[in-house]
Image (cartoon, rainbow, N blue to C red; front, side, top):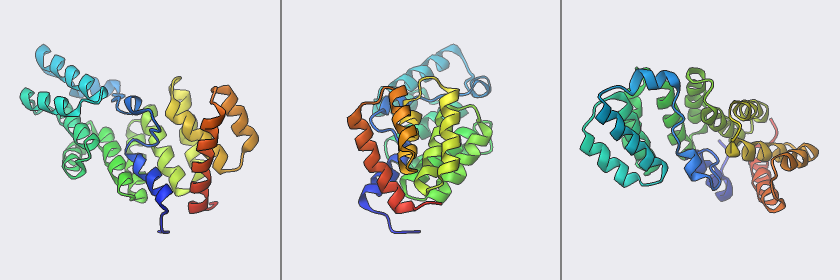
Length: 229
């Protein structure tokens, strides 16, 4: 693999949230599938209510409080295990998080597990591994817009622009309000020299000029590091 500039390394590190670019609260949402809800979020009403509280704490960024409540709940359900893995990953405790994700691979939450493992791999600059896990996650949860966007971002960092574009378009069509996918699509259009399309897209999503300028710098860095493929 080519040497990575400090600028691109910063972009790669953001793969833990896959181009969150200031949208932290959006990234931390779980986007759980209907099948998972019926398959995994089981138990009595009190347990379910506590798991909802823990998820709300996660989404608000109160990770230590969320983990404390999860410890207090003492639930060994797969859903609780998933939440623990998510909290640990978002707290930069990747090794511990990976162990919990690995334990979920043989279960009906394999899609979510591969997603988490893909984000961890991306944070470590293991882009091939990240794409592998995120591809499996997308295969298992094909209508999850967040996963499709994250896969697209990993492909973008590899310079696989055509495949990345398909993932971003899928995410945009799956979810009406998808600012991360919009941002990533803009980066891709700029990186591939599609200036007219980028300008039209920026107008369509009401993206201001300064944001476009900032994204263009990131796009040129990605292009310089990856080259056209």
